[in-house]
Picture: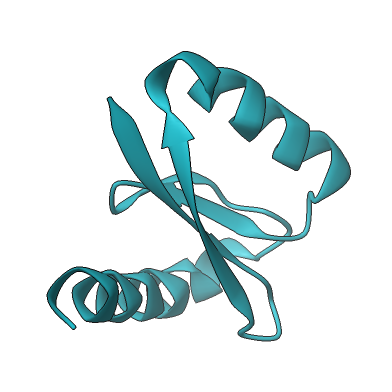
Length: 74
C-alpha cells in the first residue's frame, strides 16, 4: 500500500511524497530527526507538528486539506 505524504514547511513551501507502507515509519522518523521544522501529514492526517506552535496548527491543517484536494482532484 502507498501513502500520500505531505510535508509543509513553516514558510508555506510543501512537498508531496508517495511512501510504501513498509517504509512509512522510517520515513516519518527520518524526517522528524533531519527535517524537524516541517509538519508531516499522512493520507490527510497530521502525524507530526514540526516546530509549529499549537495555536497555528489549525491554519496549517486547513492548508493541508486544500493541498490534498488539489492533488487528488486536480
